[in-house]
Length: 420
Length: 200
Image 1 (spheres, each protein chain N blue to C red):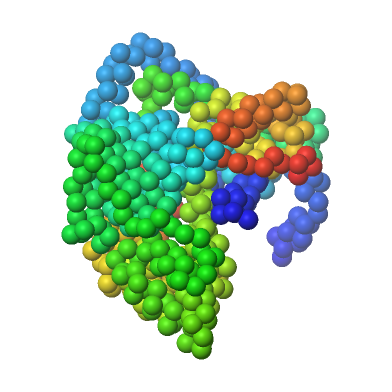
Image 2 (tube, each protein chain N blue to C red):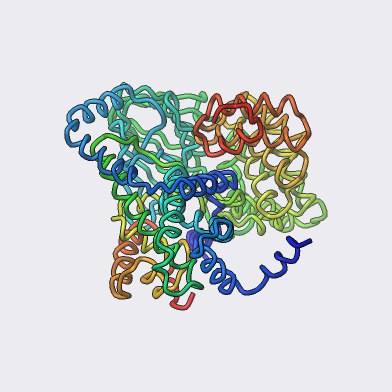
């Protein structure tokens, strides 16, 4: 079964089985009181019908003003990058046809069939996107307020305002610029850094080979796959380490090669989302060895996901802690701390540990969409750990930052003195 | 102790319980209203919130649906069918709310964006692929008409049978099928969701 078919299989209908309850119990209780009050007072909510149409009438009268306000908001351009319809740019997958995403500030992104893009960070000043395999053309509106960075595995591309294309297939990445200028970073780039102007292109990494190829071919393929995750690891060294780690008992050269392929197979499986198979490919011992030798943020994340999503939550702690210890300056460190905190809170029943992880996530910074989650989970962690004062302080911090947040009503109940 | 006995009685089939509660509501019993709310609020709220994609609007629609249901409870011909009837009322309110918000947004009187996009509702264990798929689906749903959005979601998100979708929307089976097909066509351009077999 191809990886794409497996990805599709991950989404099962009806979809509600994969969704959480949208409204907390506190909201249901709030509505219950409202219903009770409406029935007690005998109020028929005619005013809402009026309120439904009054703004429309007002809107027709004030359309010009509304349009002006709208344009003024656009000119100020605060908040995340938004797609047509107003949703923040999150994850985009192009299936069978080219998908073009128009953004509110004039930029656009065109994904060729099969390409995938995920926004790890989307704020007023910075956008961090990660591109999977496939070809994506970025047309970034010049002089915008946001600094764009695209993580394409072997390289990271810094953009200000330009039109360029990234083609990625594993560790093989080509960046070509049509207009403006970009800066390409990565250990695979000569000198670690190169600026590209209009008409220039940069190709990094060898074209991938089939993973099933034998002898030396298999070793190179394993190295390529590894490089796509561990771009700050020397490729041949990684393959050699992998073969030593996985084939200690293999006496023949063929056995050693099979060991390399086996050691890296988990990365391929994890990249496909087949985390149970990825964990089985590694085994518990192999997982710990891989955690100990991993040097890149991407690989440590992949290890943590493999453990977490294959039902081995406790094993996910080590790669995340290592990531936080050794890559605290990475933009994804906050996300790692948040993941660790949620893991400790939900799967490991360790709210005391979760407090520290979630506080660290907030300090390091998490993508804008997840900030509310981090603050809310910190309140929950303190509550479950029995930290009364810190719980009240974190609850106040939440309400100050997200007065209309999804969890605001619930958190107000925790500290009833807060005005609703 | 009496409360415990009542709880045991409450374990009888839901339809009987609803019918009894509806009869008490018709007699002016406010406690029965409360009991009906507690029995159906959670599932109805989930339906409304997913259809709307907004928690604030969901609270308003949930409130309105129950108030209207209690006000018009004499019109309910089959008391045991309270749940389906309540959902019909809720879906009418959802449709109005979606249309109203789109108009207000078109006039620039309402900020863009809702807080309950599908990918934000994903369970914590959802893989990045599932999150990405849900985000794509949510993006398409925002481009559909209110009728198509509701019909498709009742079928593919909530998992209702076609005949139940038609009943909940209050249209013919053919109309429900047509709306779902139109939405599925738009959806097929960006994602692959296998058609649900009838009966599921």
